[in-house]
Amino acid sequence: QRIQTREGVSDQLALTLAASLAQHSMHPVSRSLVRANVHKSDADPQFENIREFAGQGVQATWRQSDTPDDLGHRKELRLGSAAFCGLPSKQGDVLQACLSDQEGWLATFEFAETPRQEALATLQALAQMGLRVRVLSGDGQASVSLLAAHLNIADAMGDCSPEEKLKQVKLEQAQGHCVAMVGDGLNDGPVLAGADVSFALGQALPLAQSKADFVFMASDLKPLVATFELSRKTLQIVRQNLIWAAVYNFSCVPLAVLGFLPAWLAGLGMASSSLGVVLNALRLSKSLQVDFEGKD
Image (cartoon, rainbow, N blue to C red; front, side, top):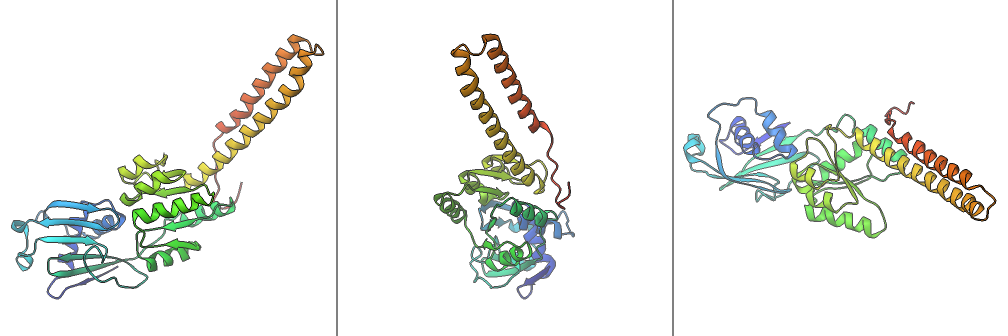
C-alpha cells in the first residue's frame, strides 16, 4: 500500500531488499512483499546466515559482493516487526513490516488487509451454530481490531507471541470450554498442538500442518463449517444407535431369558437391531452441502 524509506534509499531498492529477504519466509506478509516486487532481476541481493524467528521476523547477512554501491557497507538486515528491528512501535490501524540494517531504520512497508472472500460467511455460519469466535494474532492490535470489526468479531487480541496464544487456549480450557484452533503460520505450531482440535489450511507451513489434527486441502475456510456439521451429526447418530441398542437389550433380552420370547425370534431381533444401527450410520456417508446463503 505504501513504502516509507530512509533518506537516500529509493522505494524500489528497499522493496528489492525486503522481497529478497522475504523469499526465505512463509509468513503471509513475506509472501505479499515477494508478490509486490515486480522488478526482479538476476542482480537481486543474496543472503546468508538466514534465521527466521517465529512471530517476529527474518534476520540475514547481506553478501557484500552482491551489494549496490550506495549501501555497500551495510551487511546485517532484519525484516519484521518494529520491535524485532529494534525500532519504536508506531500506533496505527495499518499492518506494517519494518526493514532495518546496522545503522537502524531503513524502510517501513504498509499493507492493505482484505479478509478472505469466504471469511464473513464462514463466521456467520459458525455463529449460527452457537460457536464463539476469537482472534489471536501476532499482528499489531490496531490492525487486528480493524480487521475483526469488518468481520463482526468482538474478541480480538493482537501482538500475541506463540506463548501468549497457547496461554489463552489453556485459559479457555480451564474454564471448561472445548477449543478448536485454525492457523497456518510458523508461530501457530504450539497453539495448534495445545488445542482440543486444530485445523491448518492447505497453504499453511509444514510445521503448522504437522501440529494440526486436520489439514484442509483447499486454501479456504469453507470446509471448517462442514467439519463441525459432520461432527455434530455423527454424535447425534451415535446417541441414536446407543439408545436403540439399550432399548432392545433391556426389553427383548430379558423376555428371551425368561422364555417369553423364542430364541430364534430374539436372534432375528438382534440381527435386525444391528442392521438398523448400520443403516442409520450410513446416513453419514451422504456428503454435507453447506449453503452459506442460508438456502437448502
